[in-house]
Length: 148
Image (tube, rainbow, N blue to C red):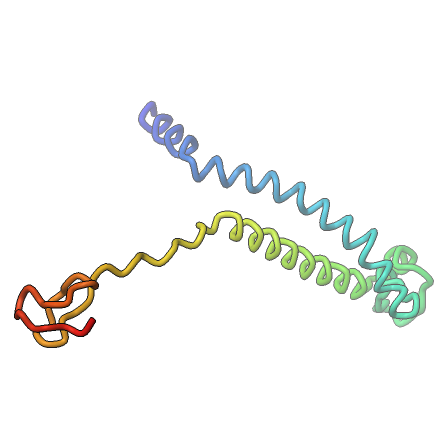
């Protein structure tokens, strides 16, 4: 039993498990931010653009009757609330886009600065194909005269 507890403790204390836990907690908080962004900012604009369609009340009542609100329909019968589905799809797409932009920004911060090209200090002798200094006028290997 002590061995099992020791193994569990080692597993939990590994860096990636703790990193994952922090990611889940931050992800939960991030979800609240994105939900507010979708519900309070984006969906009202989409509703205005689409002629004031209220997505939250878009539904199909399975009994065939017409209801003025989703709550009224849910109290009376089963409903297919496709407006809620549209809202969740928009929320997913916005979440994916925001995560993409955050990751892109983080990658830009972590990208190492471009290294300058190393200075060329050698060349190849055209006669013996040996590597020689770039300023050589005579090949030290084959004694050929080189062009300046």
